[in-house]
Image 1: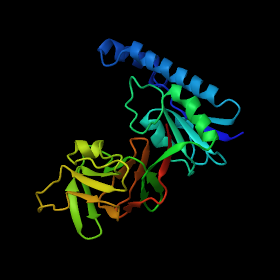
Image 2: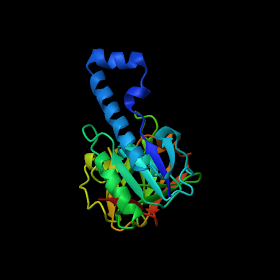
Image 3: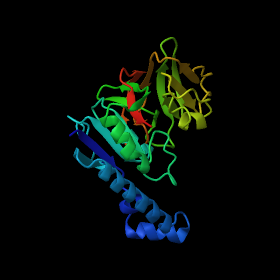
Length: 280
């Protein structure tokens, strides 16, 4: 019997109040029927996963209740949701493999998911028999005065007020520059098709170690800014030091935030521990 942690997404319809659902429906912004269909597919996936994990010592956590030590003593982490669920599970203090299941393929791209519900019994059987295949996803390490986080996808360094200018010092290991802008995207190779790509950087091969950065909406009124983007293949180091109050790091989406005091530095380097994904 193996110890397995199952991390499950809570469907959006279950996180919204009844009046919010009614407003979404009446405004045409989102269909209640689609929300409930997605929730039904999520529940069906979780039921299938639970069935496949019968006979194991199963520990289950909803994604919003997850704590870093929840995978302690576990041999496998299974996520049932989308990329957001994988990103939150990535904060677990563990190096065991992940089986990432897309619980709603109709509504979720699942860039970091590697299975659907129907694949789980076969993949669990292969894992049990020691015949599983794996894919290692390189990560970055972000370290500040008060936090150390492994980044799977990307980070946004910006002011917590989206209308405020970001002021900071950027140091890529060879050049140091004071800047004003809307912030800086920092990305792994796997995250290079996301926000940093929308900001104008071309993607790179997802499985290579990389540290990519791209300045957003640089402000040149006080002198030309030169460090607008960079590709470190493999990663070396990037340091960002806050020059004003309100600077914040948003790591792998909006749920992991690290505020930076004026003068505080965030250092990005390669993580020595990739995220190992179980694949078919």
